[in-house]
Length: 190
View 1 (cartoon, helix red, strand yellow):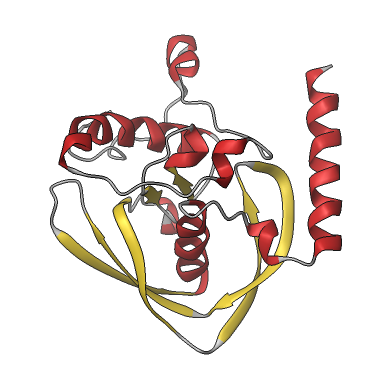
View 2 (view 1 turned 90 degrees about the vertical axis):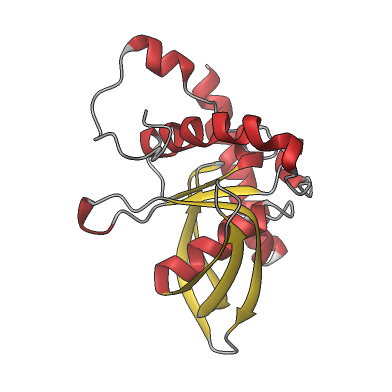
């Protein structure tokens, strides 16, 4: 994978070695998913540069549109997003992201999560957000989003605070989803 642009390579079938090297995506209720991640500092630069292309490979293989570092077992404030409009990859690497503005208008949409495979629910969030972050070079950036992008940004930033999309649901709905997930994971292990 291209280190300058981790998502530059076209989607090609992975070899067995590449499949074996994919980062495993943690499944709830893994305890790492509930951790509040620590900010990334200068000492983390090499580890983050190594981690990002591996995160993109895992996300694209899953397939997904966003992935946060705790989902691959790393408690750092790092997330990646690529909505891939019209099948053209548009990767975003968000280092130490924070929501700096959110609309009072709300939007409800169905969400899923790579850490809760095949589980979906309607989640209500601000309809628009602005996120401030650093890129891999350390440059300060901002991204504004509405619709799917706003939901995805909020979803991934929630992961950095130990929050899963099911935490936005009623206790009844959350427990139903978590029981169903546990049952499916148990059946998968057989």
